[in-house]
Length: 78
Image (cartoon, rainbow, N blue to C red; front, side, top):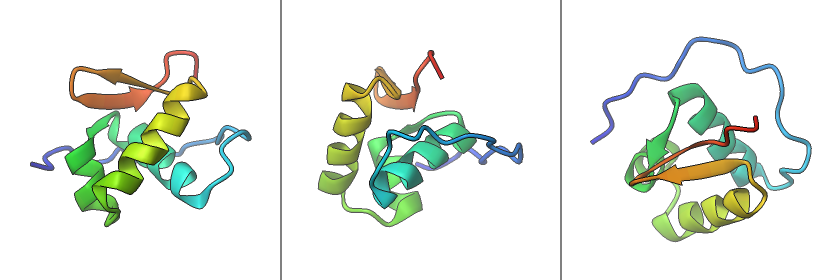
């Protein structure tokens, strides 16, 4: 269940290698919420789970997000 409240801090930079609008949206949400599960992203962003998983796979392969248990977070290098 979605229990986290997104941060009110401003996000200053978005990685330039994220090309898709959905990728940018997922990345920004993960940054603001300090991590989320696939179900959280599905509900909060109104994206179907297959799209969420595809975007997370792409962002993971680029080293931009990491999976820790069932939660995805913005990569340590960011």
